[in-house]
Length: 305
Image (cartoon, rainbow, N blue to C red; front, side):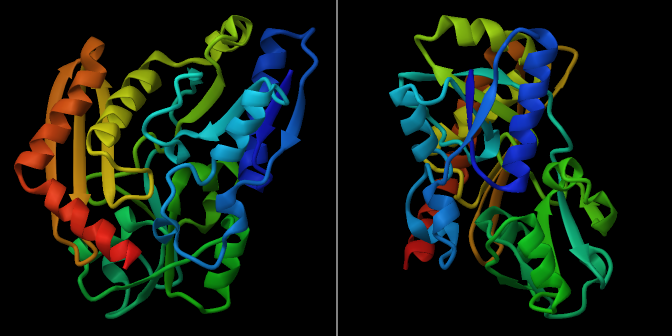
């Protein structure tokens, strides 16, 4: 079995993690990794939101899946487009790691940052929530892998940077974290902290082998969040957040659509777990009813302008 993966340290950690879990389940499997360069890896001189493509970290990997060069692909679920081509399916959503964003800074927490601090983030979602909390902050684009971003912070290009907790934890960089930002302050990206294992929809054997990796709670949350993303007609680089939690068979999802100046619409709704996708669609309807579609359109125009 060949696993397709991006070549960054984090992507390789994630793919090795899935490989090790599969080998523990199926010791006779012969598993290798194929590193694949994606458009998102190659374009480093522009903000992701300005490139205008939703499959920036996925398309080339799916080409390899389509051709049979690889059997499965491992993704950060937050990098997936909201809708997969019908020939592919997610055979496993793994147990969710810490879904929060984190602040890394020598200047203290988000509320302690000096007036006008320069915060590095490549995410319109993070930028709009930062501006809502602290309108004085200057959000600057930052690209590159985790090591590169930390190096840019260290040399003084930024006063702080915001990253995903799960990535730092997986790479054993937790010691650099200044603050883990509560979701009530900064809602995570759709499916943040979850790994997605993708295969061809007609590959029943791959589905069978990977089935034990699937976490039902993570799947329910991811399906609700991704249904919201799809219903909004938005990609994973839009200024949009969605975060679901499960308690006693009830899913509660909070979602947000924002603008670069910090204006936002935020709603919460609940539903039984079996109605995960319907919940995501319901949340999208509520967001639209409160003016979220106009905010999203304005933010998209701004990103491409």
